Image 1: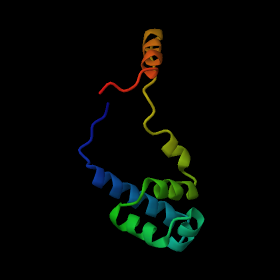
Image 2 (image 1 turned 90 degrees about the vertical axis):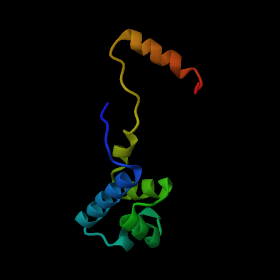
Image 3 (image 1 turned 120 degrees about the vertical axis):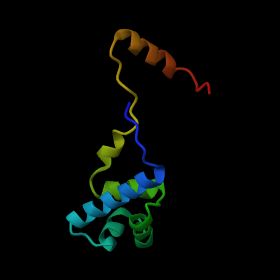
Image 4 (image 1 turned 60 degrees about the horizontal axis):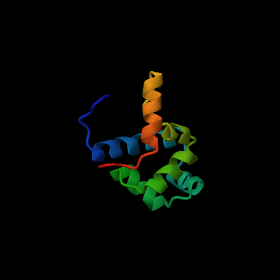
Length: 99
């Protein structure tokens, strides 16, 4: 597992910067991305400047940029490397959280 020293706020700002770069690579104005995503232009501007946006709006923006598949791959459980691990994962999937 890789650990990072970035805070959630820093990560959010990094993502907003990357989203802005993708928008500019497409030569889209904020109004264009806002229109294509269904997110208000003011919400998009706030996100690009501060990194703050709702999860729903973030996903709409990513979808409009054609990058939703990258988000879909996040937080996937680790793959099993043996039959024993696979059986253990199946058993744990049936249980509720214990903590």
